[in-house]
Every structure is written in structure tokens, then in C-alpha cells.
Length: 487
Ligand code: CS2
Image (cartoon, rainbow, N blue to C red; front, top):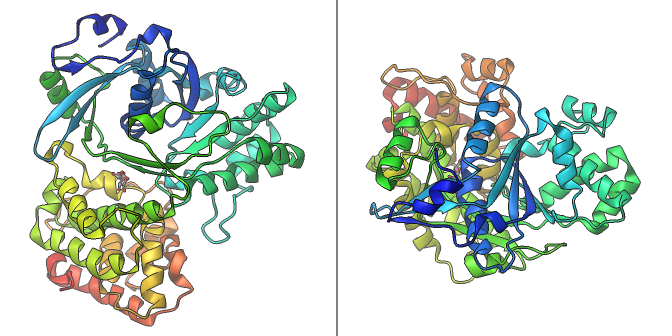
């Protein structure tokens, strides 16, 4: 365990905190304290705190789920005074360890909803950020509107002062601020979605309108929702990895974290109540983040899933193992060269050719030991978010769809949970229901194309795509994944 006491005698190679942790006051509430948040937003805030004479942008973390696992996690944070170490490792193996003290507290919302609301209504809190996953915004894929009829949302609307969803919490916090004559805060989405700020706006305003249109109008005036592109590969830390990290650092951290040395955050500078000096610690502020988002999502994230689905079928447990298979890295290069790059606009100063090389090199980083199953998880949401635009461009342009068809076929076959060598695994798909699995397992290999994952381009009818998916699934089954990879 590490605590504030540990800070006094850190091992020689561990970078200490650049500020006095006892002097930090909270300025941010963050929902969804996962590894990515710790290695990304908390990483930048930690650096920025070191530049402030009165560090006032500490973070209050909030978890929305209940149960034993969440309680264990909360206890681990409390035991460590919310401190944790981060090991940043380059593909070459060079690494650097630092301590992070930006997180000041970790609250389990279901255990004490009022404690969360008190923070949200506190004028010191000027940013409410979140990492709640691509599928967490409760947006209907077809109408692209907030799903007011979702049962959890209906529950919150029935008891708005005792919420359970992030929408209920944030809007109730804002209601209290308005009634107290205070200003709003910035809602900062850090999820991997295009226009994540616009999506957050749609979700929070969608809830607020259903609750009270006047409050919604106040929120529209007093809250901003900057769009941002976030990027850093941050794997799950298994017990073995945790032990290795501690052995290397000389710490005894119960919450150690590993991430690649690469990190990027490009954000629109639209913070209604101020922000930490993120611009001084490497965050890029731009007027329009769209081109950055497109490049990141359509190249990196799209390739990640394009690699993980066949990777799982071929029995690769880790992303670095999968990408070191030349057939799979070749597939990624061809997919990017043929389907993605020709229809992408590069942001100023970015070479898409170099970006492609960096994606493949980042995936090869063995220190990540990044799990193919983690990358494939929630494929149903990821396929929509990461592939839809490329799919539309291919279909609208009547271009060859062979790589897309391969990706879809590999996804559907992966959902059957069996690698080519017969070993089984359990796909992690929080939104798929038994009816969906029935489609995946149907003897008609085209039935799986009815999954919501493909809704984003179903209206662009293209018999060739459906046929190619069916034929590719057949080849995967009869001759194996490798035989199905298009040349
Ligand atoms: C991954 C991301 O989950 C995924 O599909 O592509 O978690 C990826 O590691 C990050 O977006 C990197 O920034």
C-alpha cells in the first residue's frame, strides 16, 4: 500500500509529486474512475497542479455502480489516500514511473448520493468530467436522440432528487446551483466518440428537458460541453502485471497503472468556469477538434478492433502478439491505405502515413500486454463508433468493401466465442441480448447483419457487402481466418 507517508521516502527513480498534496483543493468531479482516466486526464491535471501557486483543481472521483467489486475498489483508493503510480513505457522498453496525487477522494455514489450532489453544487467545482464509455450516453442509434424511456432514466425522472444515473446527478447538481444563484460548470466528456461534447450536450439536455424545460434552458446558457479527442493506450492491470510494475518501481502500490509513453488530448477551449493550465502541460487547444477526432477514431480505434476480432479467433491473447503476425499487420496497413486514408482530412502538421506507422508501432508495445478481449469488448458499440464513417464512404463511393466485409465477418465469428484451435472465450458485450446471439448463431450466415452494430450504414443498401460477409464467414469456418484475409 502507498500513502501520503510514502511520499516522504520514494524510491530513487520514482518522480515525486510536483506540489504539496495537502494543499490541493477540489475543482473537478470525475465520473468513471478507470485506468484510462487515471493515465490521461488525471495525468495532465497532476502536472498542471504543479504549476499552480494554490493548487485548486484536484479531482473528486465518483463511481456509479454498487456491489462488492465497486466497494473493494473504493476501499483500495481510500487506503492509499487516492495516490497511485503510473509507469509510462515506450515500445523500446524505456520507462518512467511517477506518482499521481490529483485524485483527492473517491465516492461510491449509490452508497451516499448526497455526498456527490453536495460536490456538484459546490461553487469550487468548475468542471465535471467523465469517462463512461462509448455506449454510456444513452443515445438511440437510430434516432440519434437521448432515450428518455430507458428504465433508469425514468426512475431518475420520478425521483430527480435521488438520482442513480450520471444524467440525474449532473442535472440535479445544476438545479441546486441555479437555485442557489451560482453559475454552471463545464461538462467535459473524455470518451472516444466523435464530437463527444456535442453528444454529452444532447444527453444531459435531453434528460434536463424531460425533467424541467426551464432548467434545461438555464443549462443551455450556463454549461459548456467542449469536444475533445483523447488518446492513450491504457491496458487492464492483471495481478501479474501489478507485481511486475511494483517490482520495477520499488513501490508497494495496490493500484499501479501502466500506459504507453504516447499521449494526446486535443480540446476545444470552451470552459465556462475556468480550467487548469492544461495548455502548459501538453494538451492542445484548438477551435475545431473534428479532424483530429476523425483521424484518431477512424485510424487507431478502427484498426484496434479490426485487429482484435481476427486476433481472438487466431488465439492471440495480446494485441502486441496479434500485430506481430504479418498477416494481421498487413491487413491493417491495407485497410488504412485503401479504405481510410483516401477519405480522411489530415489536421495541420499531421502526416497520415506517419500516423499509420505510429499506430502499428504503438500496438506492438509489449509492455502494454494489452488484452485482445479488452479491445474487442463492447464491439457492438465500437463497430458503430469506429467503422460507420468509413463504411458509409465506401458504400456511397461504390468502392470495394472487402476489408470491411472481413472485419464484419470476423466480428460475427468472434461473437461465437471460439478460437480456431477450439479454445473458448467469453466475448464482453454489455448491450447484446439473447436475440442478438441467436442472429449470430443462425444457420443463415447473413442473419448477423441485422445487429444494431451495423445500423449506421444499413440504409445504404449494398448487396455486395452482405454477400461478401456471408462468403467470408464461410471461408473463416471452412478454411480458417488466414485464408479469409483479403489480399
Ligand atoms: C481501444 C481504446 O477500447 C478500444 O477499442 O481502441 O481503448 C484505445 O486503447 C484508446 O482509445 C487509445 O487512446
